[in-house]
Image 1: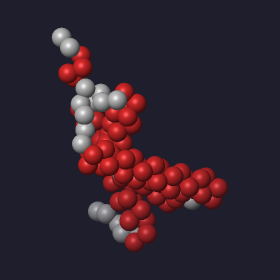
Image 2: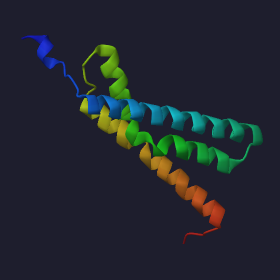
Image 3: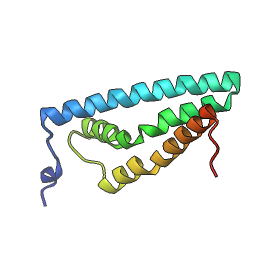
Length: 112
């Protein structure tokens, strides 16, 4: 079997999408890191939640960024779709729960 047939060549639009997604993820991680550093300095729980919320709410875009990096490094190979699905879906609930906690703490809303 010819292994060259397994390599995928992506169009320019997909390459641009991958690059822009990578930039968005890097910016998100940078801002989440800044908020978490401020949380460590001030020891404010809501800032920890905000940093985690920022980091995890963008997790559905992590597989696209990782796939783009992997594609550039390997020149066309793809990341397994099962890994991409896991990475994209596994951490989103953490971000959503963090945002719910932030909302509840800032509005003093009581559940139940």
